[in-house]
Length: 289
Image (cartoon, rainbow, N blue to C red; front, side, top):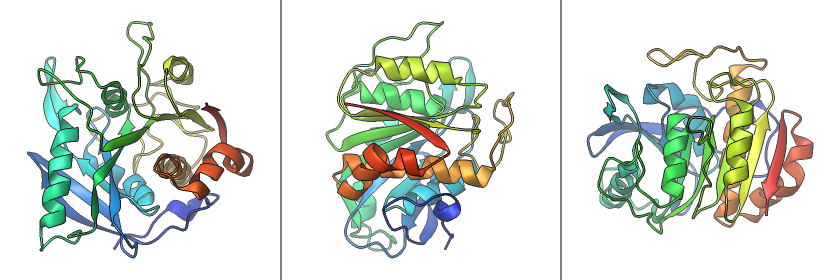
């Protein structure tokens, strides 16, 4: 059992619970599975789309924190060829693969999650390249370099997405984002790789439905990974002005409560839309509509 770091910063309105973890396989990807030990009822699944070249194990604290709010969080290690580089790069195909895993795992009598998965509800988490993949998924389209098949259709089970250190900049251009699900951007204000202004411009291009940007003071590009500059990944040029524990807890709280709000949790909605910005000195929040 892994303790939740969710209480490391100001708490949200939803009671958190202890988290357990185990290893599984989603198609060809080894994955860690984090789930709230004492939660009741069927649980939604949060697919965490990893940053480029970032091994899944570096998200253990963030994934555990999100899970403590009532999600099953899966972190597949998705290795594939991205142009000329074979490494950890997410793709839109992971949505269908994870939905298949959810159904199989829910029916597996030997699984810790047997009969506990809401197989009709998935939400998305993403970091950097994984968040950009999530934006592509949200548009219900097949776009390079995120789509590795001939087509992509957004399943009805995918309800919302929250993406950290993410933008849609293409050679300085920010295309309109025809998102078909609610989207939240969580942006470290000390990010030197996916810069704050890029997130602001991306947020302005979200066209539909509920959307939000959460600006986390002092956090950089690796504010949600277990350590700064994870081995194998590109190095961040800026340091953090807050502790890793605080940046993980803050980002996880806002992502988890935003996603719960999109699933109908009224207490979570009150926090992310009304009370949380004033209560949490570490963030500045803009929401629409």
